[in-house]
Image (cartoon, rainbow, N blue to C red; front, side):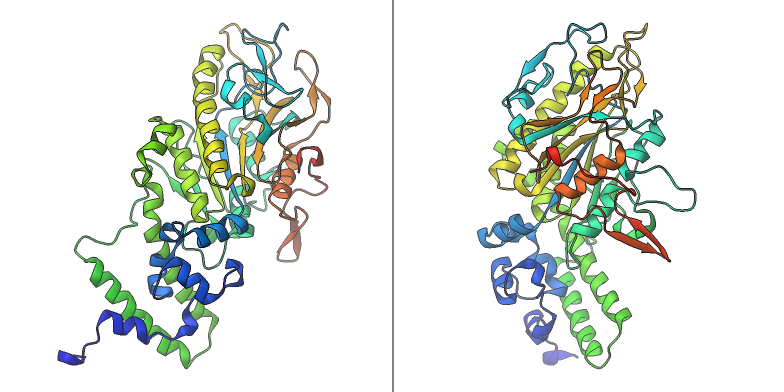
Length: 448
């Protein structure tokens, strides 16, 4: 096509058949309603223009997302936080350390004085105080808690992020399904999609908060980028009309997804947020990554892991936890408030978890060592009975006194809170693999 015969970008857009527009029932909107809410002229090529990045500004589309999309934000306490200085304080005991326990907004629930802001928000949070995961090394403990089961030499299990991406993600999503935020000191644990394959592997940020290679080249203008994509869609749709092939459809879906992921770069840029919101989170990396996590789940990302290191306090445990707990207390409480104000907390599960806890015994370096036999985690928001706790350790915290659970039960509880059937099976060849380990039961006492 040359001269006056060359179609304009708008003509190319209008030439595309209506059948390529997003009509997924998952949106809970009519096709025309979805397009009107997102403000886009076309899908496929210009899916980026109608993603939640801009669509969330429209109350109709934002409301649909909030009602339908469940998500997880995992606050990974890399190195293993002390249960004594967080969720299960033992003041007055020989193992208790110098910090007191304080009352919370939930009756009969006390936590460490190092978490005063979270103490006022326990109505959103359930604590599990009776984990006996038995594996006390960093690699094995992390793998166990992230996959809910002991490693199998013949099979690589997907972690909780990959399962959430698979079960909660949408085929037409234009945002990442699984994002893992880095810390420079936690050994760069990326997470794994295991036998689910690369489609559900995490987008791992190793050294910066905004992903690389998501922008169009500077040499290509925005109008040229759109024109090229529109022409490609026009030719592709003509090609598809005469052929029926899953491979062709898969290729088209993948291409559209790449365009959507390119547009999601803005989600990682906290400068897009009002200054008042940024001020609430503050300047520290962990809190800023929590803000990014909120932006991602608001846009429809099913799973975000934000890691805070380094809780491995073999020496100077109390000084270490005073600093790290202040960071956790501020970031987590701000995140919960932000999610609640936006109507997102009822569909977003916020989890604090690490590879294990810390020993009751205080060593000669005033530290606590690895301890997997009696420790704690927390669940907040989606599907959780706020203001509750489950299990009990004996007075000095050496063993579980009541309600012992393992990694499998914690894993099943997380799935259940999200409305995912923990007994659902994936078939690997002829081998059925349930989402949570065989025989695991969710902890009903902490579920809404």
